[in-house]
Image (tube, rainbow, N blue to C red; front, side, top):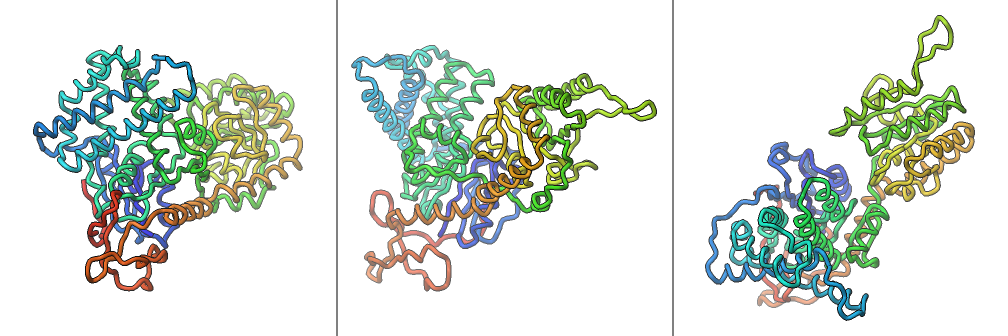
Length: 575
């Protein structure tokens, strides 16, 4: 099977997001052939280069998401009118969807709201595909998106009678900023990936994220009928909401962009054959944006358990009085509450110790680390056991790679209980690593923690030092309970969160999607007529038994077969 893997700011770039997951997926499915389509986010990312690629990667095509190049084509009158209509329709939908203050005039509530949402989704998709078709037929889309025509179309939509209150309040500077953001967000429409020698030559398109990557998959599906599988380990639309809410963006711009990203998410969930998520929190966002529950699949992130095997098989190596925290130093981890909780633990367990092991430090982590060190010195002044001994603080701050914690596995192995005190958390990777090591855990109820733990650890409310301390003391006092919970946690992690289960899940979904898709490749006979039943299911599996390639055609979404060029077998990079 030939898979078109679409990434945004990720694999195969060295510093790409989620690059390790994609690499494990590609390397784990050596029986398939992969074409990589990568959208880069910066010049720096492109300059870092690619990771070494396995032999099953046939080619790589890249495009800059951060600086789409103008092809220099100037539209004539007909093309300008066509652009103004499509862009104006898109802007009209965004202005109507970005506030919703018009109420429900009919009083029929849910039915009218559902019909209106369906109508807006159809209009949004029609405008989006109209712009993509214009870019395919005429080129010049990047220049058009930068033109005054685009800004004026956005202004007219904001001033129209049906526009929401937030859109009507947009000023000229706001319109310029919003047009700039939309230009970048729409740049995948101008990429030349959607022909029969690009994504159209694949059996399945797998978008490794929502947003721009999923938009590329939507266009491939629209132009060539390639089925689309979308994976989101975090809801992309939620990330956009949070980003624009904290960067000082004007309210009018924020609502317009929220409407656009919400529209892309809704269109993605409507058209994708399957949509996967890594936890229930992301699934709830997907359902809220219109995803059909029947097409949703849970695939937990796959993690390498090999490095933690020895610790998991030697639970007796842990210090029975030591708590260990491992993670990235930043305010969201709430180490302040952890230190206050440990102060209460010390009142009941005077020999208890807390090791804070850092894997990295965030942008504002240095100042936060200094604050935590000062708090630890205040809460736990160095006290000597006798008049001739040196005082010691029960809280230690260390780094992975140091003398006491050379590796992550050794850091986890040193503790009887692993703790997580976050107030904000997505998928708790550190918690899964602790589970691989067979350690009992105490965690706060945030993000996907409860879903990951599944009853194999203790969970308390966030920012509640008293409850946190009571849970820690309960486990420190009961070694048998710690051992039971640790063994159960390790069994659960090995069953659900390994690389092997992740790869197997996607392999099964690839086969499921392709098995339900109509045949797009039509084998042609000597007369040029299609030969029925000449493309068997096993033709998706690479191998010599399929015989010499026969003349084929790719069936477009319109249904008429067109010649398909021979797939490329060399690695290719194109801007």
